[in-house]
Image 1 (cartoon, rainbow, N blue to C red):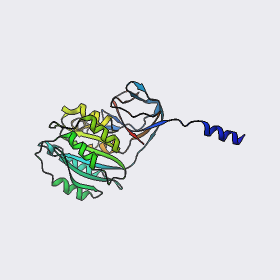
Image 2: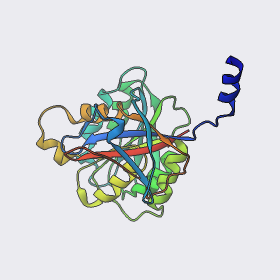
Image 3: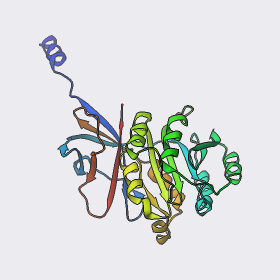
Image 4: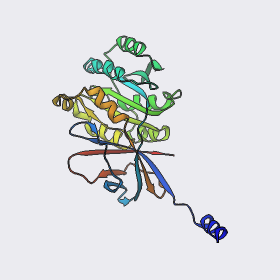
Length: 263
């Protein structure tokens, strides 16, 4: 009988699965949702429902690329760059990249907060930023030395000159490289773009004006709290999720969910 059970188990095909790294944020407070349940999550792609098999916390360190706006309005966000550097914990590392029409590596991945602060102080502003072009360049070449979860903090005033790279191409590059994009911005003129980049790559967006209205907690600490506390969601079936992918939560308020397919 025991041998028969073993034989039957080997004949039953394994259930095909897709895994997603998911960020869940309360959009009103910019804080992570830490009590999310699998029964609350709805994932669809091109109106097709993808059943959720499992959801579990996937907290851990991240290798963070701080992509810093060097446009004319860039100095608006420079003070936050120092606060974000202060949030680094061992064994996390950060790289500093300035962007205008492309991306320029200013400081490679390091755990040294002093080196990162000195690099920020050397940044010169006055360029014409092209966000999508810079993201494509940074994702393509910037994470060769990374070890942990790959994260881009896009620190921007919220303006850009017209990029040659399309939004879809950036999402494709980010998914291929396992990179989550977290836009942090002041001006909301590009809000839809920022939300879609985050939603399709397992990131989240942070409007600094909105965060300033909530005096409880430093913005940089809230941002890293979100970065460090994603979920791993397992779906039934295998699929290459398209730009039509949507992930939502059945709960009141304004939950913002995003997903990055992982191998």
